Structures are given as structure tokens and as C-alpha cells.
Image (cartoon, rainbow, N blue to C red; front, side, top):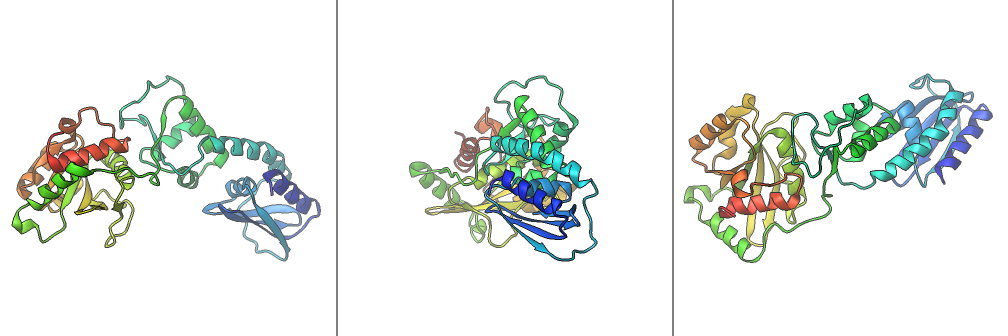
Length: 341
């Protein structure tokens, strides 16, 4: 069923002054709308509610609907007049679908220069005044985020969010990252053999634990690194810990990288000074600490010195590295494990 047909069916229920629940299902999502004597009073669609959910539900492609006439609860999350909603619906839904097609796919996005410089600019930024809706998205786009997650995270309507994204794209402020479904090989052949030997050459006292490589830097940079690692062939979330980024900037294992005879944990250590007492424990016994930037340099130097762990500077290994490129992060992993590139 097309979205236009879905809107037409809802109009029929409204015209007939029905009371009940309209359930909408599609391959991507499901929703339900509640009507009381032909007035839309409630809508839920995934994690959204109210008018946001109503228009999201009506924009679902390949959807099916069923209406169940019955008494409904007094819960209400839509106060706007139904005739006004329907008048806006035809325009909003059509534009939402058109804009959604511009950002289709599951690859996450990130803002270029959301405030402080966060990534290497692949192209010059167009000087353009951003709307309040577009500027509000920069907060969410400081770290990699998929379109579906962004639509759920921002309280604005999907239509407003997509217009803001389109404006950021036009201004050169938006970058789409690689999909975690596309995998690259970190090392093969001689490099893999050398990595295996380098890991085996660790001190005997360290061999009781699985080897680790620690990435250290500002949290926004490590968010990009963590996404790049998810695109490594042989990288998987550690079974012994919960996947995902912790709510506070503490060190955690991003992935366990295995390739033939190599088995190593890839750890990120956000360099937020308030959590510096945890850093010696995070780096202790690590093969190396790969420093991504100059955040909290003196504190991190002391933590690594106390744990007798060598620091490798990413800028020395690959001076022009781009955190948004999976290939560059893979090169840094090889370099940190093998020595200078």
C-alpha cells in the first residue's frame, strides 16, 4: 500500500466519525493511531509519539493497515485539530519521503566542524547561515549516528530533521561514514606474521592476559575510531562486556580483533581528565598506547610511564590520517603493532 493510499484510508475513517484503533505495519516499522468520533487523539510509531509518530506512520512504505472499532482509553498525545493535520499531511509526507531518499542506507553520519574542529575537511565548507533546526542537529552529529537513531533522538518532526540534514549537506557540513556491513582487512601476509611475532615478543608476565592495543584521545575522535573498528574484518564486540559506548567517558573494549593467529583487544581510553585515575589500569599490560591527539597529554604521559607502556603518536605514524577513513585507522593499528610505517 502506498503512503497516499494510507492517508486516504485514514481520511475515510475520519469522515465516518469512527472510534477505535488503526494499526499500521510495514517491513521497517509498525504504528497505531487512535480515533475518537473521527478525531485523531493518539499516535505511536516505534519510539516516537504524538504528531511526530502520526506523520511517521503515514509515511511508511509498503504498509498494511487494519481498523478495529472499539472504545479507546482517554490517553491523548495529539491536541491539534484533525482537519489541520490532514491538510498538512499530504505536503509533509510527500516531502519527508523525498528527503528520506537522500539519506537512505544504514551508514552513520557525522558533522564536519560541529563547533571545534573534529575531522580533517575533505572539502571546503560553504559559508552559509544555518537554520535553528539544522544547528540543533550538530549536537547529535558530533559522534557517528544513523538516520534512524537521529530521527528518534531529536524531538523535532522527521520532516524538520530531514530539512535540517539537507541544509547541512548543502553547506558541506555533513559526512557519511562507511557502513559497518562493509568490512576491510586490517593486515595480511607478511604484516600479519610480523604482528603475530610482535605480540608474542611481549614480556612473559603479560602473556597470561589477551594482548591489547589502547587508543587514547578526545572522546569525539574515539567515537570515530570505534566506528572504524566496527568495519574491520574479524572485529566483534567482546562477549564478556556489554556492546556500545558507556554513558560516561571511561576506558572500554571496543572489539576483539581476530585474524588467523592474531587475537587482540582494541580498547579506547577517552582522555577526560576527571577520569585520569582509571588510565593506568586501562593501559597496564597493553602492547602499546596509540595517542590520537594532544588531549590531556601530560596526564596520559604519566599514566603510561607508571604502567611502563610505550606511547605511539598517530601523527608520527600517519601524519595526514583521517579518523573518518577506515583504511587510515587500519593503517594506524598496523603501525602501532609493528612500529613506524
